[in-house]
Length: 184
Image 1 (tube, one colour):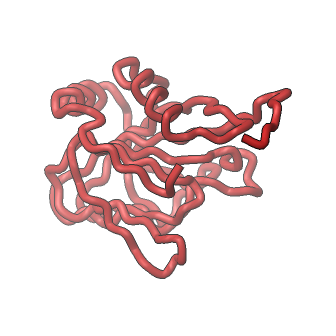
Image 2: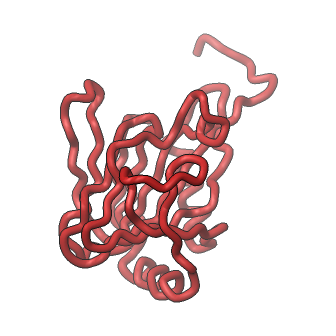
């Protein structure tokens, strides 16, 4: 897998609209936490978790299986989707989604962000390049999915107008027992 994959129109405008209509009313959003229940000034947004969205689960799994092909490992699945809302002035500063020393995050291999709307200003998702010196700003797009390694530093810039909505998820890998290594 390359460091970043962008899949435009992974969800249709109608699918995004349906997700927003359903979950904006059904979910009880809470202030986003960092790590094990901490709230600090590195992150200001609201989140709730969704245990599965049937309409996209299988499509997402198929996409991941095609992108992530590492000999001796299999994609072990998705956790609950994080439905995230960023209002004016809200953001998430530079961070990674994995940690080799934290049990909760050590198995995260790649991160997934799906844009649900684009009726906002600011709020750009940015990643650091391999050198860590340059910032890559990702384009907005309803239904666009970004997949990147969880150890890549990234952030969401402050929203300056409107409200930004996204679905976030993380993928882990599992070592295949008795995998036969070959030279080919």
